[in-house]
Image 1 (cartoon, rainbow, N blue to C red):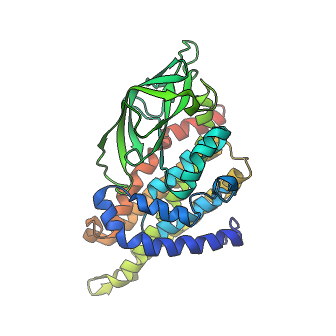
Image 2: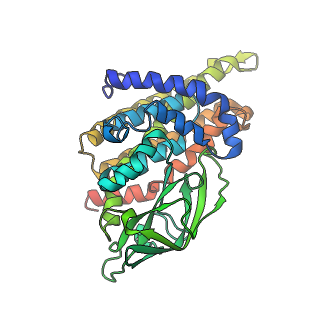
Image 3: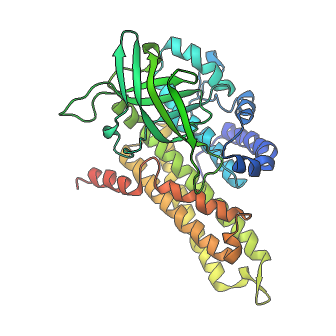
Length: 382
């Protein structure tokens, strides 16, 4: 169906992204999967093309165009090529907004040029071994001592945690018995700070090129100059960026569902059963037709959400609706596509197997489907 989201500049960016992915990502992607991470050099290459600094102000080496649609294009082109740029996506869509919104002039001068160039990689450490969606339950502490904070605690499931040079750590600086959400602060821990230890790289079912780590902090001294925003305001800051984070997941879900259908159509046209192409069976046609309709519905909903986000009008409840619907559509589509591959769909040499395992986490991270339903229900005064 016709889309009205992108302009000429976005389409020019799309061509740049498509060429880059085909030349520099697709050929080496299997090796990245084996290594469990993307190489640092890929960030530098993206940085040299200006693809990491679109939203960063020009005076720090960026383009000064804070338009989420460029991020959408990059995700769509990766999915079209049956790969992902998971860690890049996290840096651009989830982490960079905190730096853009809450850094001061000194911090921007210190960090932005390296981020735009792909020299400084980032992560955000929210989740703890006992704390997931309930951020108010964070137990990592940061005690103020003069011009420093002393950080103690542990984080888990941290995307980009192995490669990150800068880690935004959500830590508790005070406790209010009457308000669990109060007293959280954002602190930037830098690679090499004594007491900052990267634990094991976690072995996941899917998203293999996205390095995911356990991090620990033992008496890590973080300068007050590395604090983002005001002390005790982290919960409010985190809430403001959650709609974009959830839209990011939805973008990937729809793009990957579309890619799953495309690769399945190619397969069933070639694969024969009982001497006949699988594509000729009525069941195959009906399944793919139904999936196509679902994807177009999800795309229309997503595009509306993207435009609202760009205009600054996307509510938390609407972001939850988009994420819930798009991730559930992705789950149904990739499962049905894999079924059409038969036994070959279960083999990891076929992209549909990777699309299947990658899809499962979409209904978990950035807020589970159940949390999305709670948010939506609250907006309905339920």
